[in-house]
Image 1 (cartoon, one colour):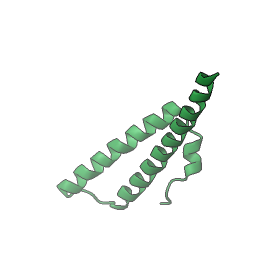
Image 2 (cartoon, one colour):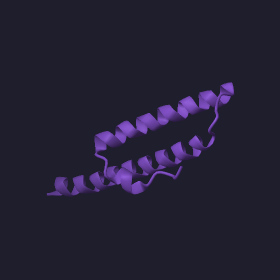
Image 3 (cartoon, helix red, strand yellow):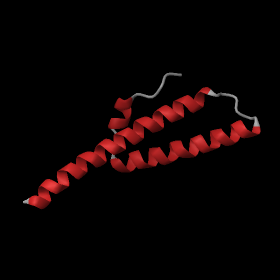
Length: 77
């Protein structure tokens, strides 16, 4: 299974991005529970979920930074 592409995440709206981040965090929680109870069969899912979460958080940070840079210019006028 290939790792998710960042280009797919860039097409998401802000609301979809926040929803996806929440879903990935819940998935990681469930994976940790499975690992602790010894029922985890596909350990590579950790790598994929962490990679996707990092992509989404980076994208969210970029959008927040761009929005913050845009607001002070409007306030100065």
